[in-house]
Length: 239
Image (cartoon, rainbow, N blue to C red; front, top):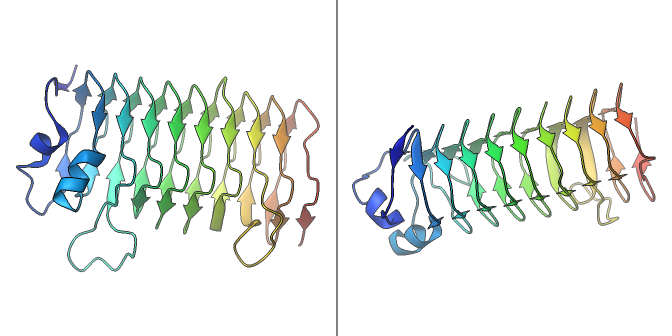
């Protein structure tokens, strides 16, 4: 089901959009698509709603900055809604800047790259499903990062050197492959530090590495299941 965008180019899809958000709810993209090519030509990208959409080829939003509405005080820009979207191919959000992002119940059936991405407000990944490798290395979450009940299945999950400025919630998450949360060993206000972080009820079936991190405020590992001994080399815990 859904509306097919077969043969459409990103620029053609968004040419009819004025100043509002792009509403592409339930759209089916049968082939590869690069939304970054539109952003380069237009110089900006509207807030976008792709809830319930399906991407059967590879999709790239790399280097896109999604600007907000006039008067929006956010430094990063507007919001993007991928609630319930399905990515059958690879998804590239490398170096993409969002204000608020919704990936609730999204299914990533191939690899996804969020490395160096910036999330200005909340990032909602509740109950998302990742089938393959997941890369959040060097991503920056300025507000809450919400990953409760997420499944990282048959994958390598990378949160190395990821910055969580306020809180991160991984309660009830399941990591079926290796999970890398190691830092750079630098314990200043941002780099290498976890402030409020919650892994309560999470399950790690593969290796888990939290080395070179500083847990500065509330840390919750209650009822966590580790199938292998986790690594905390060089980490510090403050309460």
